Image 1 (cartoon, rainbow, N blue to C red):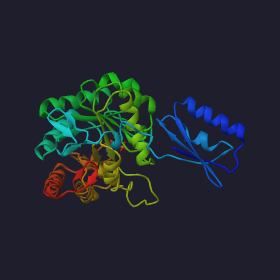
Image 2 (cartoon, rainbow, N blue to C red):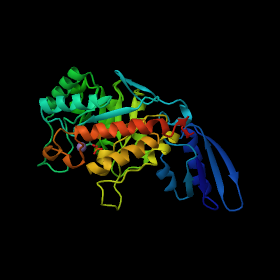
Image 3 (tube, rainbow, N blue to C red):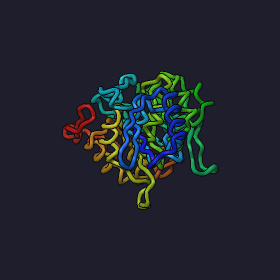
Image 4 (tube, helix red, strand yellow):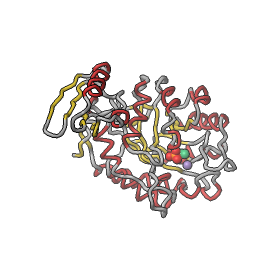
Length: 341
Ligand code: PEP
Ligand code: MN
C-alpha cells in the first residue's frame, strides 16, 4: 500500500500516522520528493481501512498494490482449486453441468426433472427450497419439505444437489446437501458467509446484482478465512442500464476471475438472461470462454412453473444445449495458472 501525503504535512499529524501504521505491524519506507512525501507500507495491509486513511487531513491519496483478498487470491495460491462433489467436480478440467428447476415444487416434478437432466448429461441437480423472491406474495419455496424432496431426487438419481440457503437458521437442514448456494441477494450477508466458513461444505457464491468482481472475491474470502477452502464462484449477470434481458451477462468475468483467483468459475445463463431462448447462446459463449461449468434452470412444464418459468428450459431443450456444450468444450479456452492459453 502506498500513501501519498499532501505537500508539507503537519509534523505532529505525520508522526501520529506513522505511529499508528507501525502499531499495525507495518514497515514504512518514506520517500520525500519536491512536492509530495510518499509512504510505502510493507506487511499485511488487508486489515487497513483505506477510506479512513484517505480521510486524514495530511493524506492526498492511498493506493493498494496488493488485493485485499488473500485466500481467494491467485497470487498466493497458484494452482486451481478443485472441489470434489460426490461423483462430480467443480474445477480441475471436469465440466460441471448443474441443472434443475428454479424451485422444487413436488416430488414428481423434482424427481422427473432430475432423471431427464441426468439422462442429458447433467452432473449435479439444482432446485430451490428457500426462494428469495422480490414479492412477498410470490411462491416462497417448499422450504424444509423442498429439501426433503430434493434429497429424494438425489437418492433416486445419484446426482449431487445444489440448493440455496437464505438464512443462518436454516443451516442445520443442509447437512445432506452437497453444495450450498449463496444467492446473489445474500452475497454480502457476511454473518452467513462467516458461518459457512465453519462448515467443510462446498459453497457456490453467486455474484450480487450490483457487485464488482473484487467484492465477489471478498465474499469468497469470508468463507475461506473461516477455514473452508471449498468455494466456487458463479457469474449470473449484473444490473446495467440495459433492460432487454433480465440482467447483463458479464462474460469477461470468466477470464478476469481466472486471473484474480484460483477458485472454479460457474456461469448461470438462466438468471443472466431471464429468457429461455437466450440460454443456449449464452451457455455456449460461457463454455467457449472457459467457464468450469454452467448452472441452467430446467422445468418439466415451464409455462406453469411457480418461479422463473420464462427462463426455464424444457428437458428436451436442455438436452439440446447439453449436447451443444459438449461439442464446444474441446475448443474452449483453457487457462494455465489463470492465463488464457
Ligand atoms: C437461483 O439460483 O435460484 C437464484 C435465485 O439465483 P440468483 O441468486 O442468482 O438470483
Ligand atoms: Mn430462478
